[in-house]
Structures are given as structure tokens and as C-alpha cells.
Image (cartoon, one colour):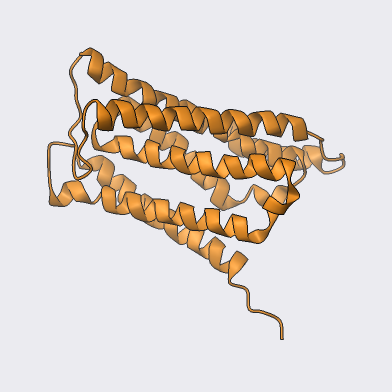
Length: 225
């Protein structure tokens, strides 16, 4: 993560300053297609393992600490989503290689860093239970987002601002959903540890504020007379 930050914020822009942008269109098509497929598979896996086979409660769900096959099956999607968050951070590297330095903004770098840390801590200490929604919802949003990137690589009409606007709205809806979801254990305790909620709720309030600020500046510009 240290090298990721160093490359995206300092080393990469310096290395690319006097170079032509790399043509990695075909690499991005494969990367985006992989992201979509991996994300869809993981979301379907979470739905099956946690909400069909185990019938998780969306109000509050304790963690299953047993060593049963079902408990272990719930570990796989969480660990895989963490791996996916690590792979997703490469997108900022691609921006640097294409000399789109503004795209590697504080908002995007902070968001990816937060997801990596959340995945690391969540996979190690609070796998399953109420926390499964964080990875599932975020991965579902990523499936939509990378579908947009994939389509835009084939047809430039998808690069229009309205599509980016809709995706940003969807991301903000994600944060509102997770803020509400991780507030529920305080009201309806079920044995799920509260410390992840204490961390996640303010974190996603901050993310919502960052995304709203980006949305306001990017899409609420006053029309010229």
C-alpha cells in the first residue's frame, strides 16, 4: 500500500512526465471484463451462501465462529472480495500510465485504501455475520461500474457525463445504505461486535461527503447564460 501511494501520487507522474501515454486499451478491456465477471460471481456466491442457504438477517446477524463447512463457506466470499479490492487498486495505476493524473485524485486513492484496509481487518477479525453486506454491496456497485468502463471502451457514447453521473449517484446510495445497515446493531443488538460499526459508520459518512462534494462540483455546474 505504501508503494501504491508512492507510485500514484509521486513516482508515476514523475516517470510519465516526459513520456507519451501508454496505449493499454486492450489491457483495460480484459481487466474490466475480468472485474465484471469476478464481481458478479462473488455477489451471487454471497447471496447463495448467506441469504439463501443460511437466511441471514439484514437487521443484525452475529458471526458464526464454528469450524463447520457452512461457516467456512462464508469465509470464501469475504476473502475473495478482499482480493478483488486489491486488484481494483490497479485502476489508479492505469490512469497514471495513460497520463490521466487528475483521475487519480485524493477521493479515489483514499477510497481504494479504505476498502483494502476494511477488507484486511474484516477478513481477519469479523468475517461473515453483519459485515458481509459491506463487501457484497460494494462488489455489486463495482460490477456496475466496471460494466460501464467496459462498454465505454467499445462505444464512446457511454463516456457521456450522464452515465458517470448515474454511477456516482449509485455510489452515494451505497454509502447511505451501509450507514443505515451498520447503525442497526446499535438499535437491535444480536451479538455482532459493535467496534466495526463504530469505525464503519463515520467512515462512510466521510466517504458520502467526499463523493457528494465531487458530484456537486462535477455535475451541478451553473448553466452559462
